[in-house]
Image (cartoon, rainbow, N blue to C red):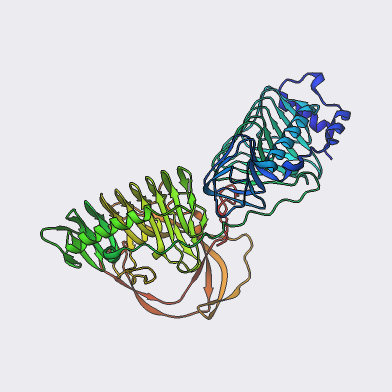
Length: 639
């Protein structure tokens, strides 16, 4: 049990300069603990309830009912995957929002009654006697508060850290605000001590705004509007009594109307929409891995599996003129360089002209497809797992915060319609799982596409303007610019063969080649001596079917970027790869398999050097957790 003296000290921290009359007595503290829970009645089943409108952009998940009243319009929720009530006359505009464990009520009797019950609850909350009278503008971040009724004449905010609400099961918190409630980016309101978000109530005199990626606990009842910024999550409810609820790629999980209460289940993954009808038909463009309109320019040891071409332009730069098969020269031109192509290089050849024509036709087909999911104007796809379908982005799409996973059975099709730009960050990735193929992933980009250093990308990019592949980016698919240039730097682009739907086969593996000395290497490791505090006992493991005795750890190896030969070995200013890629190397005993190998790298000059391998000494395995200097475990991973 929290002592009354503890609450007195917290009260002083809230107010700053405390008068004697403001302090809680032991009796008033007991009254704080004895608060009865408000009852939302029919509003208890609603996770989101607006008065004028409810508007969503992005892949929002809501557990519980969604409704609006007295308004009748909701925007941004799937009209095929959700249960709609009172439509018509109410309206629901299609989008990416999904509702589980409830229905969407566009006006109607149920939403009207919920709105009335929510208004009654709001009045109840605002009438509760204050246990703690805070300052006009209160910062709650970094505090731990016991149960009670907290009153703020103007506004309250959580911007500087985490607000912890600590109390035993059944404890109740009521926050009365005269005006606004605001949380900062990444702010958190969390429960401790056995209490639940069910019993946290925020009565907001005007509007509530939750910042980007904030995590919030409790039921918000705002007299005006509620806005949830990108990635904000709420364990509780968002009920706006006179204005709109605006949401943007959020999670809102409702809890029951009154205690006792169990948390709702986690939102399920999005249901698979009906398969997109047929894959795009590339026609004559199907044999091309890279196709530019004005020029194609390469720097570094790029390898292309499939044909390379340009049309209506006629100039290609940076590809080996002796090792590659070149078509259309003259009048087209190919400037010598390190790039290699397994197919043919087509500098404005008839094949390139036909490929450009068919690629433009396919682009028109892709952008004409009907959207299954409409995202926000600027959409972040990193960290998402998406089922097959047609995804529409009014402005731009990016993969910057983690891998994008496309999961679906064999034959699944993904089409991404992007109004302007597509970008990826350093070492980002787009992967296909579940049996689906990169053959059937299409990116129709309204202007330009830029893939960041080390990106591993999947799908066929058809960009209306240009495509830029920065150092080390790889594409399992195609890069086709319809009006501009394709610019490459030490890339791998592997096309597939897909003359018609259902006949697509993976391309052969790229031809072998030595690395160029100017290439930035992304797979070097720097190893440091490791000394365990407690040496483990030797153990037996199987390595390719043979028993190996593994002893103590000797090295910790971290991936680094290395550039040669102009500069000494160095780490990039910003990590090119995440620290979770660390290896821990253990000594290996009692295994002997001498053999000869040839080594060719930037440390041995231009000619391969023979090495005699005598016996293995180390077994290196990925580290599941790499601790930072201060013992943080932010790099923990489960792969």
